[in-house]
Image (cartoon, rainbow, N blue to C red; front, side):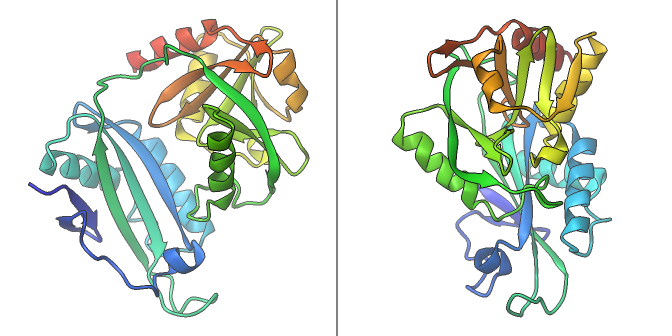
Length: 277
């Protein structure tokens, strides 16, 4: 049985030819995407994903954002999981502007493609081996209102991924235009320093991650002091613990940056709380 995707509401084989070279997502990166986790056939944190998706569509002026609500995400993702007989998996919804035109679109109609890949894990697991990371400074992430959105224009992450690959790293730290910590290759960053948990503020240009929001709330619920702040990259040399968060993997702890080595006490405690949800 072929793996199915949902293209604008129609379930079709994943190897189907979907669009022409005139597609605006292909030509201009004119769209955004949402990565989500399915466990036991259910979509995790659908309300938070729907909220972020709708805010992103509004920012990009793509019509139909009211349609992309919690019910829409749960219904479409869980139906696709059932049809593909996937119990645990990673879903990706790509939304793009369905229009003609050059830079200026002829309309702002919404189109979408939903896909899902199976995963073995029925819960979030902390990585046994901590990540080895370094700072990527060849390109820096700019500040603007699009910085918090997961747009289809992802060249900075592609170039950072090449740097990671060439230097045999597990992940990389991205800096913003002020050379402060922004995020990792596909995750948000948390730093445990002097008995406080810090994460780059949204004003620093990081993606507004769903798992970032969940972990901030979990920390507060468990009396862990957490601050959204401007963070100088030098803190990596002094911190006791560093970990990454995203919707697919949950929490991943960092073991090393240069000669610096970190612990994973806070990340262990938080992933236990995360799985209780």
